Length: 296
Image 1 (spheres, rainbow, N blue to C red):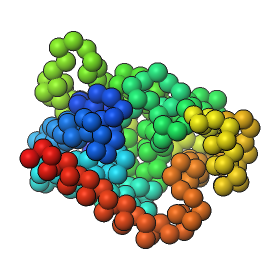
Image 2: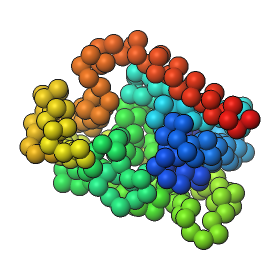
Image 3: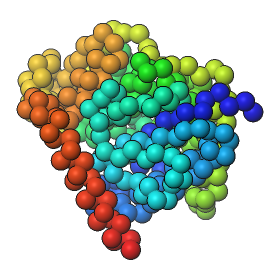
Image 4: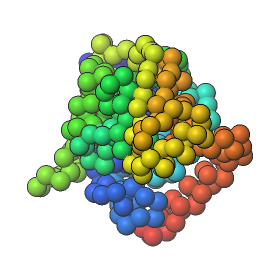
């Protein structure tokens, strides 16, 4: 098989990884989080090893769950660069693309409003996110965010519902679903198939940069009701009715930035982001050090 991409960026999440069994396992210090971190790490390690064996020259792994400090780098091939913590730019959250031409999204989840395992988009406080009349998943936002860097999404893994939504918008994706609640689920065997499918994606001649045209009209339905929606809408100057907030954007970059502001920031925290990010990343490192100590 011809390898078309040799510099690869992996985005890793925890919900669609092999050892995350429930919501509590996604939370920092939550019951089951240590095991979920290890499972997520072993999934990534299997893929990274296979990519290098297939001829990859550089692999970058971006931890992209909650604090972005969930992976144990010492379990992963030392030739890969594991990037923990968040970056302000050039790509929101991700930072630099380091010359990568391919994006692999691992351990992902289905969008808010769907029936997938732990389904949400950006935050579970959003019960439903519709853009131009359809549910939008994080895969679309992440893939579009790297379009300006010339990075093409190739691969996606997560629950069957998550795979269906991702492939519905990016039909060229190589997808590998997980049903970890099936009787007799064998994580190592599933991991081997995951790695094989990831390697196959490097030869995908149909893959392309994902940058859908706007304009976009988003309806964000807040789980906590009208009061929460009104507070957020007023904070950022968005239209609001009942528990729904309405966003309008000319392109995906603008839509993503509006959603990030809505979900994660206040005007004050947005202004002090250069100071706040290092502190948040320090918290993430401390939490991971704690879970390491618990595992011995």
